Image (cartoon, rainbow, N blue to C red):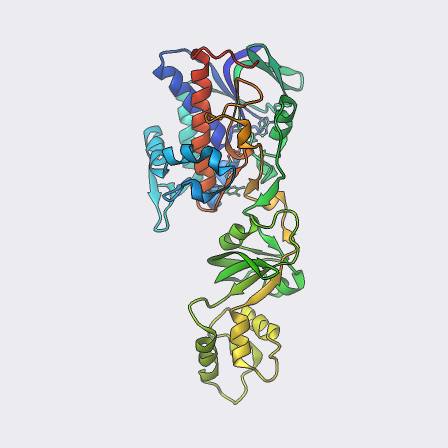
Length: 411
Ligand SMILES: Cc1cc2nc3c(=O)[nH]c(=O)nc-3n(C[C@H](O)[C@H](O)[C@H](O)COP(=O)(O)OP(=O)(O)OC[C@H]3O[C@@H](n4cnc5c(N)ncnc54)[C@H](O)[C@@H]3O)c2cc1C
């Protein structure tokens, strides 16, 4: 039976960071340490290749505690200690050059997610970290001084385990929520889990005619007069949902019960109702009456303009003030979110109160947790990968140190 110093369950962003950090910590301490990544997929890093539309938005200049939801207080000190510059510096030392956009999003200089994965894999190889792929961990058995990791007929023994198995978002990438099932028998609990950074479902009769349209807007989520959040950005209309980064940001607030929630799109946030109405009234025209599809065609994509005009009930005698008002308050009912396969991240997870500041489990010594499996999720823009690198590095380092700091492993 293979016997390891540290087994990392999951070869995603946080697991690869944990394995590299554990190896580096051993080297610094002049110790020999056998580290392996156990990954259910045939290769590590499948989700990483899908991130940022294949560009991998790997961190954000403004990453800090305020960019996260969930058990933020428990890890705010860790997040404060590890700003984006540290992540960029760490990647540079691994051999990856980064570039930053005006909004503070940080990408590999190549703008290719594959560069990030290739650099990580090269560094694992250089450190002789084994990647054992096609190894879905089905059970973690706790033994005196270590753990047995079961996968079908196979078993691997390790003195320390880092669980980096991700959440439930995008199960087609491998992270299907099985990590929670590994941790529950070891004494951990799991909060409610919701898809986040995901399109928001609405009345398909309303959005179907707009399928494929994209437009800048300010999107506001509210219920019964209470506003949750307004975000500006590009809205995309799909068969049955509203999508786009600003919609993703609102999806975090929907959870399981949308209730009376609705989304209002301000399609012209730079204009007041009177100034937009004045523009509409003053447009040059061939005849006294403008056909409905022409009323807003100088301001918005044609099909969107027509739907706003219909929404304002102005097919025949247009009331320009009403049309302007509705263009700035184009409302859609919220029917929920699309489900896990369309989500970028999991809201909820293992409570951070169940780990210590070094991300060691309080339920089982010698067990460490990192990444999306924990109850922390970030905004869109590089914050979730930032958490994966920061938490993976912290957990990997702490797991390695615990081997020679006189800690006895689980017990
Ligand atoms: C389409 C998409 C685009 C995204 N784009 C961005 C972006 O640009 N920027 C950003 O910051 N965030 C982005 N995210 C979010 C980000 O990718 C995740 O938050 C991050 O990858 C989480 O890292 P992780 O290591 O915790 O989990 P994961 O990356 O999900 O890795 C978990 C790994 O564990 C493996 N695994 C699971 N269970 C087991 C098991 N039982 N045994 C063995 N292996 C197991 C899985 O196969 C997987 O490889 C995106 C997400 C998606 C889906």
